[in-house]
Amino acid sequence: MMHDSMSAAMTASQLDVVARELAIVNERILDAASRARSLAAATDWRARAAEAFHARAEEWAREISSLVCLAETARLAAAQARDAAYLRHDGGF
Image (tube, rainbow, N blue to C red; front, side, top):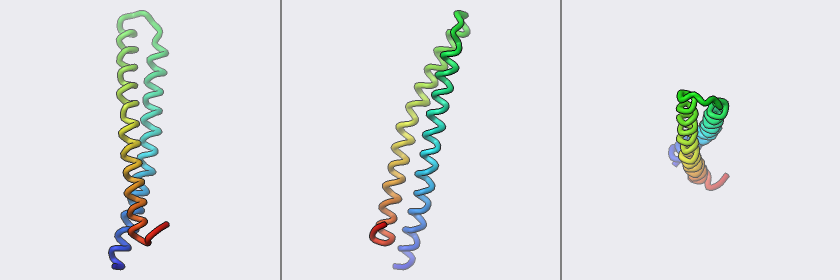
């Protein structure tokens, strides 16, 4: 029983790290999308190359932004698993 308790505590601690790191990933994804949109907005030229760059930067920003939901779902799952591990460890917080 002591081993199970220690294992649950270690798992909870590791999941806590995972949840924190995923929160950082979310922030970085949002920052990358914002920067891509800024670059796209800064290319106000009328050259075909600039228009193509603008379109690609906007497309990339949308794709990157869609990763936020996935990363947030993973972060929430890790936090829920962490909470469950804490509950298994000592029956509460």
